[in-house]
Length: 388
Image 1 (cartoon, rainbow, N blue to C red):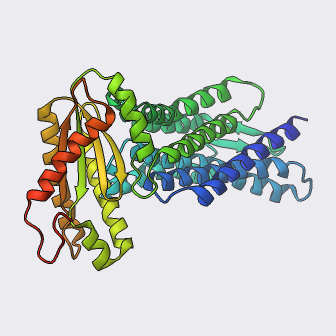
Image 2 (cartoon, rainbow, N blue to C red):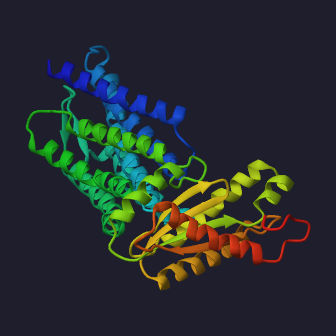
């Protein structure tokens, strides 16, 4: 009866994760963060499949030596999938915090090396049996290295969760706060599942249930964020912006500034190089805005207002607003050199300051009017329409 229950639980976990993965491929975006989440789902799908097949193999009573060998392989797949899944979550967590660290080849190599250590421990278990052992009756016995491995995975994941925890205090967007909190809860879920698995004397599939619930929550959170996100640039969309702006006008502590940002000569890029290249230009601009906002004590709110226009809402001083404008221009110049495109991206930024008698429309209009003045007074690009 216990074996049947074990198989049923793992079947449910496997089916749920398989459905989440299918829905992500069918309805998700191709953002870097969602690609990492898909890797998490794939890894744990293999992990759950390993334990499910191992359990089903218990109903096979022929060729005991072959069954025992296959059991070792399937249990090893479970452990390897668990290790790879945790480190894939580390990549997901880094992207959730707008971290640029994993975009470097060196950082990726270090992450792969860190992930390879527990995987190597699983592979050597075939001879050493330090991690786990299967008796002739296929009883699964964990050894000391199991606790070392789970402790290692917990510590590494906690290290990646800590920047998210510290970012929560600097975040003033409720949706973003919820996303960071939920993402950062994964190591606690893993740690709790591990402690419960070694505490219970009954063989209960606690880890798979805890991980499945966490993955389900991450997927639901991702789906909810898609509703409020611009699919192309992966920043907040206009609908989310207007609702958030109304909320912040009633709930803020410091001065507020609104940056209305427009891509210079964007029509020329579309007309000359095509709309796909224009979309790529918008993606790079959004990347620059995220990078520029990442180090502020209270991370500014970024949204795509429409077309080639973006809005950043900053709660802070005028000096911080000016510093953000400078950082945007500097980062854009740096990325243009790196991309080496046949055109040069540049931005015009209108800066509006909120006053107590302003509505949200007035606030946007103040920044938009300054943007119009800046674009109107600049010299036109040769061969281009004035202001665009």
